[in-house]
Amino acid sequence: MNAGAAKLLEYEATSISDQMSIIDLHDIKELFEKAQSIGLDIQEKTGTPFEVLCQLAQVLGNQEAPYTYLTKSGKCIPVLLSFSTIHKPDGALLGYLAIAKDITAQKQSEESLYSMTDRLQLATLAAKMGIWDYDIDKNLLIWDKTVYQLFGARPDQTISAEEIWERHIHPDDKARVLNTINNALKHEYLFEHEFRVVWSDGSVHTLKSDALIKRDPAGKALRIIGTNRDITQHKAEQEQLRLLSSVITNSSEVVVITEVEPVNGVFPSIRYVNPAFEKLTGYKAEEVIGQSPRILQGPKSDRKALRRLKLAVENWESCEIEIINYKKSGEEYWVNIAVFPVSDQQGWYTHWVSIQNDITARKRAEQEREQMISELTKSNRELQQFSYITTHNLRAPLTNLIAISKLLDTSALQDSALVEMIEAFKTSANQLHETLDDLIQVLLIKGDTSFELERVFFEDICDRVIFTIQSMMEQSGAQLVTNFDEAEYVWFSSAYMESIFLNLISNSIKFAYPGRKPRISIRSYQIAQEIKLIFSDNGIGFDMERVKGRIFGLHKRFHKGEGKGVGLFLIHSQITALGGTIEVESKENEGTTFTITFKADPR
Figure (cartoon, rainbow, N blue to C red):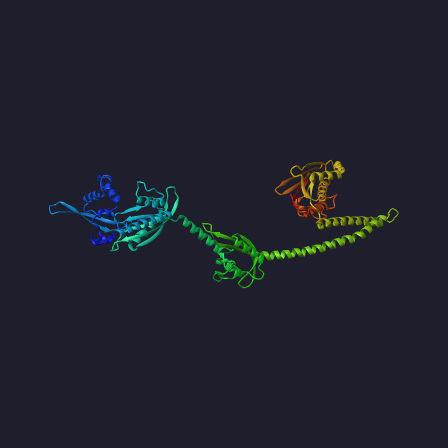
């Protein structure tokens, strides 16, 4: 053992015992495995390790082979070992010369390379990235399995990669791709390009290729090594982002995007604002980026609304508020703010997005409307009070006039003109009294909001009204058909409902078509949250074009004969006073239909 071997194996050359064998330096199991691998007929149980080593030396001769040496401390060292025979002068075999080369660094480099290759394979698989290699001189294109998958093909197909490329590349992209490659071969070492491939099922996929051109010292291109990856989804996402960016940029609504975490425990800082923000507030984007949205608030900004917004942000909840903000100029404006968090693909919140609308005009209109309503309510109360005073003050002297007119006895008077004048006076006084009563009744309906709604059954009301006008029904020969099965009752005023039934049934009889017995139909039904009550008759009807808009007016008469023009006005007032509606359809000489709509439960 020379000094180099002694150092490698951690021995002192002079300290090696005469009893120490070369076998002590070897892995015994490895020797038997090598013998079996080259077909030596020797077994671990029948042959000694030394005999195995000798046979390996005879068979392998000067061939280098990897072995494992054991150092004095028991450490394993990989070596590249070759044997040479040593002979006596007479040619007899004297022994063997073993030359060992330490290949530890080489082994480590190989293991590192294997590890790097494994990691590269894992990375390409995870990224769904295919690797290809094109030998320019041999015109040979080699793909890995992933490239085949990216082209929608299988690697076990009989056709070559070149044929698959020709068959599947998009016709509109082929010339451009070839031109890109040819230009790169003239000048470049690295190049990239995008192209589309068409799979057998007709679907189109976009691939991105990054390539490296290997050249000889003279600059001649020898090989192209590249990667392909599918960027179809990435392109779609880019297009979607482009569209969204265009929408946000050109939107008339204000868009503000902030960081996700609050700054100094307050609101998050602004990351982006669109042009609509700049137009509304007067601030440039660079003036507010990094600032808190609180720069827009001021003395009249609702603190309760801001606290509600702050609490929603702390709890990662969407929120909508209306608040007064301030422009850069200090001008106030009302704004509706809708805020919601945005998360990434893993579900982690990354930003807050705020959509804001200027509602200043609406708020001013609301304030003006509220002021107008307040003023109208005040005026209405004053007018109502004046109406009550006027009607009641008129009633007393009018009552006296009627009483006096009753005392006047015209039978003894000889002057016919005087008698006619007195009778005219009585008639006028009575008509004025009736008109005053009608006005008082209307005022009572319009002004009385104290009615308690009750469950009013249509059939009960109808029975009471029919009992009241029984003689009128009999004299006219009127036929009444009712059906309240689909909606038996409604929440309303019982007194008002009696007035509605009484007026509409009476009118159907009063304004019957001459020579035709009155036929009256009353039915009820429910649609969604509404109750419909329908009155129909076969009377003389109206010319709707002529009377349109005046049917429910006070003292409006559309037929000669009976009626003061108060009934329809009263029931319209009664119905609308409790939140209902009434509509009419009619044809002359055919009849009229009134449709009354109530809320199913207005309580």
